[in-house]
Figure (spheres, one colour):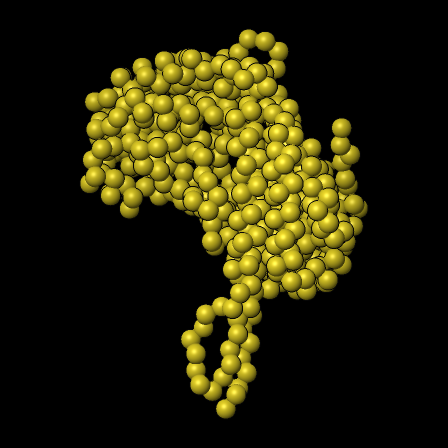
Length: 452
C-alpha cells in the first residue's frame, strides 16, 4: 500500500526541488554522472530483485522483467556517458578577434510522469536524464506501479544522491499531476503515456502561470497504432513469428506493439493461418510461471476496455480468428486475439487498444499497404517484411514512423542502438536512448570575449 499525496504535498515537492536546484546545478558533470554509474552498478548486482518487482507489480513475465531492468541499467550508463560528452569542450568556428565558448546548462525543476508498462526502465531513463543534466526532479509514478518508482528512488538515495534532487510523490493524475504541471516553478515536464493525458499535459503546461518566468518545455511520448506490412515476397514463417512476438509480448501493453498486420492478398490466408497457429500455442497465466508467454493485463478497467474493443471489432465486420475472451482462471487474463478482415478505418484499426489484440487488414499490393500504414494519427513504430529491395527503399521514404524496422519485429528498441520516439500524436519524437535526448533537458549558453 502506498500513501497518496495531495496538492499541498505536490507543491511542497516543487519548492523542495527548486531549493535543491540552486546547489545541484553547480555540481560538476562528472560527479553527477558518477551517481548514475554507481546506481547502474548496484542495480546490476540486484537485478533479479528489481525484475521480481516488475513481475509481481505489473505482471511482466521473467524475460520481459529482465529486459526492463536491463534497459534501466543501460539508460543510466548511456546518459552518464552522454553527459560527459556534452560537458566537454564544444566545437565552434574560430575567429582571431574573440574567444568563444558554448556550454550546456540545466533548465531547472522537472516533473517526470512515467508509465506503468515500463515501470522501471522508462521511469529510470526519464529521471536519470533529467538528474545527470543538472536538473532536479519531482517524480510522480503511475498509480499502477508505485513500488518500482519507490525502488528507483531508494536506489538513488542509497548511492548518495543529495536530498531534494529527486523527490518521490505518488498520487492521482487529476490532483497531484495537474498541480505539479501547473506550478510556476516547474520548468519542464517529461511524460510517457496515453495520447489523451499527453495532450492534456501539453495544454496545461502551455498556460503561463502568475510568477512564471519561462515557457515550459514538454517532452511527451504518447501512443501508437503500429503496423507490420507483409509483402507477398516475404519469409512468411519468420514474418509470422515476428508479428506474434510484436503483438502479444507483455500482453500487447507496449506503445510499440504490433496492433495491425497489413497483408498482401496473395499471401493473406496463408499468413493468417500461421499467426493463428502460433498465437494459440502461447501460454497465458500467472506471470511468474516460466512457461507462460503472457501474464495479466494491468487492471480490471483495462481488461474491460480491451474486451469492449474486441466486441466493437467484430460488430464492425471483423472476423474473430482466435481468442476474443478472458483466459481461464482468476485474474485479468485475456487470450491472444486475432481479428481478420478489418477495414482500414475501423475502430480497432485506428484507436490504440493497449492489449493482446491484432487487427489483420487485407490489401491488394505493397503500395496500398503503405497507404494504410500511414492512415492513423500516430507515427511511433512500424515495419515491413519483404525480399524486394526496391520496396524496402520506397518504404524507408514513405512509411512515416519514428522507428522503422525491416524484416524483424517492431518491438525491442535497445539503448544507444535504436533511439526511440515517434511522430504526430505519438509525441515529440524524443529519441530516448539516443545522442539527442539529453538536449531536451539542457539549454545552451554562448560566451564571447574580445581578445584583440
